[in-house]
Image 1 (cartoon, rainbow, N blue to C red):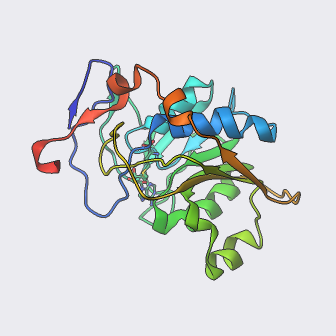
Image 2 (cartoon, rainbow, N blue to C red; image 1 turned 90 degrees about the vertical axis):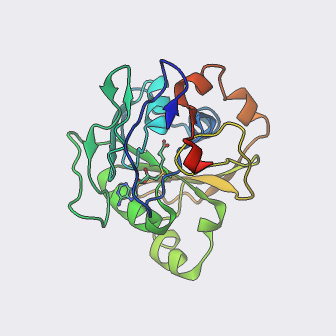
Length: 228
Ligand SMILES: C[S@@+](CC[C@H](N)C(=O)[O-])C[C@H]1O[C@@H](n2cnc3c(N)ncnc32)[C@H](O)[C@@H]1O
C-alpha cells in the first residue's frame, strides 16, 4: 500500500489471510461521537478509550480528535505510523487468538468494530473491561436466537443506532468512494443498564458532512496493483 501524502497513516506489512482487515471510514466514528453519544448523554472527551481491534488506527485517531485518551491494540501489527509514532500501543489478541492483550490502564470505554465472527466474544470481554461499550456491527447482528440468548436477553444495549446511509468498508484500505449493500449500526451498552434499548437513526447527510477535506490525505491509501 502506498500512502497518499506525508500525513497519511503509513504501513508496509503483509497482512495474513483470514483477519477481518476492513479499515473504518472516519465519518462512521465521527457519527458515533456527534450523532449518537450526545443523545444518550454520553461523551468520549477525556475518557480512557480502548480500541482493541485498531488495525491501521483510523478509528483510534478519529476518537482522539474528540479528546479521547486512546489505547490502541490489534492482534496483527500492521506496522502503521503517524508522524513517526506507532499507531498501536500494543499487539495481541482481545479474544481467542493466542495470549490476550492487557491494557496499560483501566478503560472507561471499549470502542471498536470487531471481526464479525468474534463480535459476541468481543462484547463479552469488552463489558468486563469497561462500563461502556460501543461496537460498529452489521445491522443483522441484532437477529439470531443464539445471539439473543447469549447477549441481548442478558445485556440489552442502551441503544442501537442505525446508519441510514451505507458505510462501505473495503479489505485492506479505506476507499472514500466505495459502495456497499451491507447495512451497519452502532450498538452501545452501559454495564448493568436496565432502561430498555433506544432505537436511533444516524440521519442522512453524515457521510458528506463528517468526511473532512483532509481525510483523504490522512487515511486513504492507494492499493498495490495486485490488490486491484
Ligand atoms: C474491521 S477491522 C477494524 C478496523 C479498525 N477499527 C479501523 O479503525 O480501521 C477488524 C480488526 O480486527 C483485528 N482482529 C482480528 N482478530 C482479532 C483478535 N482476536 N483480537 C484483536 N484484534 C483482532 C484485525 O486484525 C482487524 O484489524
